[in-house]
Structures are given as C-alpha cells and as structure tokens.
Image (cartoon, rainbow, N blue to C red; front, side, top):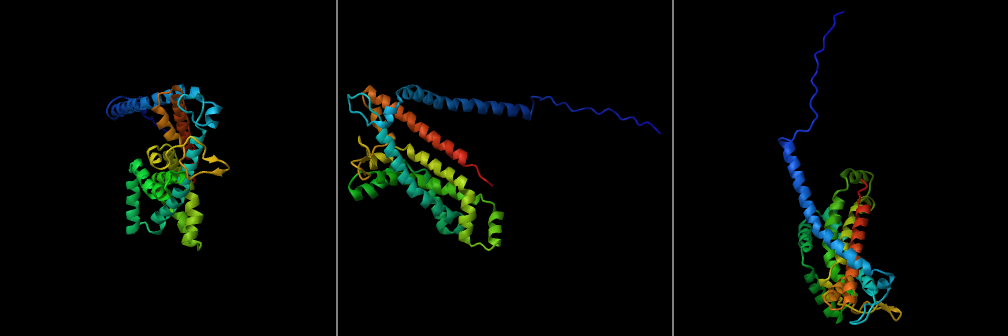
Length: 297
C-alpha cells in the first residue's frame, strides 16, 4: 500500500480587516448611531422634563378632582381624562367599523376598480390633512347643526383623523393574508363572504388591531380639532345622574393648552402632570399595539 502525502491546506484568515467594504460598513454604521443618538436628545430631554416636573405633582387627587380656578390651590384633571376617553371612544366607534369595511372593499371586493383607486387616493391624502381642518369640518357638520359644542362633535373630528390610518393599515393587513389560505377555503366550497369573515379578518386581526391602536394614539393627543368642536369644561361629563355629552367637554390636550399659558404656578404644575399622563397613555397604547400586533401566520 502506497502512502499518499496530503499537502497542507492553508486555512483562511478569519480576522476582520478594515478595508474596502468592511471599512465603509463600519463608517456608515457609526454615522447611523451618531445620528440616532442626536435624534434621541430632544426626546430624552422632553421625557426628563415631563418626569421631573410632571411626576412631582402626580397623586390620586389629580385623577379625581376638577380643574382649579385662578388663585385656587390643589385640584386635578379627572374630568379631562374622562372627556378624552369618551371622545376617543366615539371616534373609534365611527372610524373603526367604517375603516374596516372600506378596507375589505379595497383589498378583496374591488381592489382594482376606479372607486377603489379614488378611495385609496383620498385615504392617503387624509393622512396628511392638518388636524385643524378636521376640526373645522366637524364644527360645520355638528356644532353648527346642533348649536352647541359637544363630545360627539369632538368625536367626529377625531374620527376624520383616525379613518385613513385604519383604512390603509387594515387593507395592508388583509393583503398580507397568504393566498393559499384563501384558495383552500374556496376549494372547500366557502363563499366570498365566508372567506372574508372566517379567514381574512381573523388572520389579519393582529395587524388590523395595530392600525386601530396607532389611530387611537394619534387621536388622544390632538388639540386643534377639539378647540373647534368640544371646547372645554370645568365640570364632569357625567353629572346630575346623566351623561351630558351634548355640552362642552373637557380633554387633556385642551387642558394642557389652557393651563400652560396661565400665570399661576398651580395650573402650570397641573399642565406638566397632564402632559406626562397623556404621554404615558399614548405610550401604553403603542406598547399594546406592538404586543398584540404580531402576525399569527
């Protein structure tokens, strides 16, 4: 038996060399990190001010008391929180069903029709609509008609801002449903309506929920539309045994706007505390949307 001599194999060097593409990649990565850190400075500074100045005033009292008058001490913004939840709820009750039904038409029933193209274009245009114009629209539609500022007027204004977000995100969520799932349902004899209600909507629900939560987060922080529609009130929306929705209604955003311009320390402290609460509400809504917005397919 002859002995075969195997020539030694030179192992490649696994050490990283900073030349060529590796050097460019390192440089661009460093630039991205520097830009990201610079962009986070304003956000972190605002959060620091909110936590230090607004957190010092947070207590159970601010969530249960009414806003104070000029030289009065104490008080809170419980009515503003309640009014915000009511108006955002009204807006969601209008925008979510309409938006999902519109998304069903855009994604499944007539995705390439002229009506779908026009509706899709209008929804994209509405995403850039200045919020104050939504307030003017709701003022002309509801306030002028009813003759009073009210929570439903504020809800309509917020619904206009929520609707395009719900429509576009729901449409994309339905388009992401795998085609094989729909073909399998059709192959089993399901009708189009059954495929939509039993396959498309349940499968795309997490992504649809994400869009709804993002729309709610945007609506909760709007101020300009509510100045034209709901105005403000120093009283609870529920008083004398009834829900007074057809009266001027308080909201956190308008309270912050009003109190931030007052020359009283008590109101300024409440404005900082309300700002912190509003930021926490928006943050919580976004976190929930991320948790439940993971696709299941």
